[in-house]
Amino acid sequence: MAIDLHLLGVPTSLVTALGEDADGRWLRGVLDSYGIPVHPGVPMPETGVATSTRNSTGVPEYAFNAAMRKRVYDITPEVRQDIREARAVVVNSFPFDDRNQAEALVEATSHSIGMRIVDANPRPALLTDILAFSANFERFAATADLVSLSERDTDLLYGIEAVSLGKRLIDLGTRAVLITQGVHGVTLLTSSGLTIHHPIVGLPGAVVDTMGASTAVLASVISTLYHEGRNLGEQQWREALATSQLIAAATCRTVGGILEIPTI
Image 1: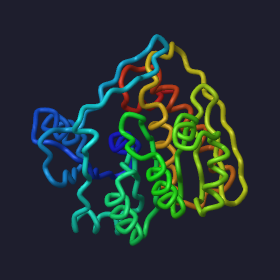
Image 2: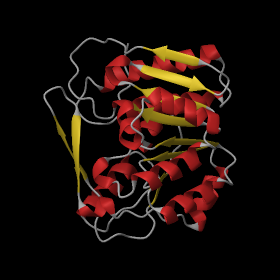
Image 3: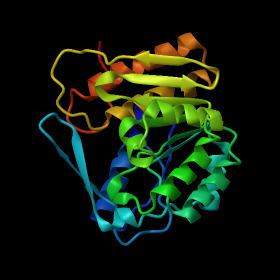
């Protein structure tokens, strides 16, 4: 997500948990090559790793090491200051089932002057308490300008359709909900009553890897909000969704999870 936003012209820094091992050093090097500052927090003995394999249709499946299940995001005074002043705070794959970390995140972001955006992105192997995760996610989402959901997320956490959860979040106070739907495109719900759907976009070449597609969609929409402001009109939202699907199509036609900007 941090690299995708950087590629779309959004100045980005990353709060993460990195180990003092080879994986941690490698990740720091990658982020440094893009010029993305990192707030690594308390050094971990081992870096959390998600190992991705693709099935025959290019859909990724993940396995996680033990360190990934024990990750801790250290919200230092420096991080709090950055959160307070940022034009947008993007929360991605956060351990909302950890009560202490969830409370620290809610407290820190409550002072932010910018947009709040969250992609819960839960993974079954990382969940320790689904009820706690859902409750803390909703608590954060109620103050969010944008929430990203997928059918997989909502089925795992609630056993309901994403549109139904999206409407529930809007009622709680979320300003907009972006639902990524894979081959069915993307749907947007807003607190002003808009419901907009955009199908996937066709591009030359075969789909070879869907990893990073939903992240690319969200990054593209965040970029629009960052550059045009949070109060988008209907036509601006439609254009934002169209752009996101074009970028997702290009991303799916390359191997790897990094966003691809189409050349057409």
